[in-house]
Image 1 (tube, rainbow, N blue to C red):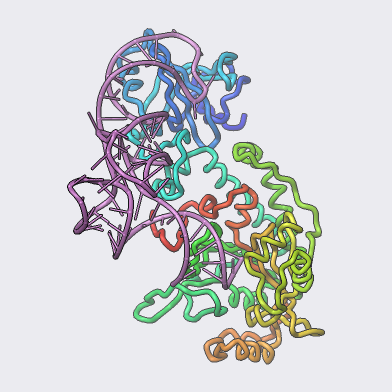
Image 2 (cartoon, chains in turn yellow, blue; image 1 turned 90 degrees about the horizontal axis):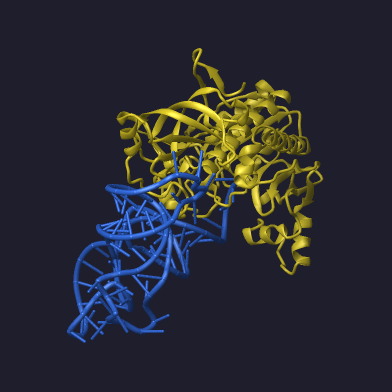
Length: 440
RNA sequence: GCCUGGGUAGUAUAGCCAGGUCUAGUAUCGGCGGCUGUCGCCCGCCGGACCCGGGUUCAAAUCCCGGCCCAGGCGCCA
């Protein structure tokens, strides 16, 4: 049976979440953390927890030896313990089953006064929670977020393998800004100035000329002084790049990935979704697609006049979200507001073969067809005020047979926010780094 | 970088506008005692706080100035 391991003829090891009425009468050993203690005098109820769930252990003080009484008297919340006893169906308990225990051993003692209320009876501010993040993560609903995240990682990798993509890792310490735009963190690199990478963009493009289809899941860094619920300085990006594809091809790959991820989470993380109170269903494909021009028209209809050529601002996206719920694409942004490597539409170079994946007003991903022509790429670099000399290694690759290619980058944590219905990105990061936080 | 709001026991808050009745209230938490069916256990007793510095005033948690720290939003972006 899942979660049960035979230890010997008399005792099996079992995890708290796997204690079920069907195991009535089994002699078990359980390891976990003390989630709650309800001491009624002669009777002591201890709720044990590990990431699999909770179970109730019952101890009787009547007839217990002094050693057991001492351990029970000194027991603290959140201590790591091992208990042993017999599983009993217990109609008088809400869980319907409990473990009638004979013994307990403290494996790691927690102090009496914990830095904040781990039971959740009293809410804690984000600052307090993050200052004591390990304790905070032990709350079942917080643990659940990262168990779902684990499944999302696995589902993404599985999907790309099926699609013939090769997982790669690109440098995170780089010599020059890759795209301009976002501010970079400067680091001292043996006396030279280097930067933390803001994206794998140029490397992944180069790599399609070797592997055709690549993807990377990795950390990237932005030194923006942003202070919002959806920005952090270190985030996880899911990036793909594929040869012989255009923006429409990679949009299909992107929506396919989202659907695969949702299905997998529904399959494997039902308990965690329930714990979070989230009901999910796989979105229908294809996702809705509107062009930048159509977005401006819709904004105008909603009473917000916007001049052609500017980027869609947060306020605009919030207005658009009234019409577009769930996932949708905005395509064909003006070439001028996109990075230099985005392919202009050949029939109308003012607009580009680009797209953003939105969830309501939250931007999840952006991508497009890339320029594969060396001369055009140089021209675009210059038009954006960048110096082609500092891109000479990159440009050289375009002389060695660079195919047509396209790709996108998706903010992993933003996707996890959507899947777990969290409104603050810090909730879905183990140890977030933002403008004002560098520890723990 | 800019704008707005905030900092009171371990945690979360009330009090601040309209200074004195604050010996700073409540919940949770922790300690001690009681309880054989708890499941946000319950009951009794106890413990613990006004961010730092300066100023105004007979009197400051409350008003003013400076500093430090935090939250949210904007711009930018994933």
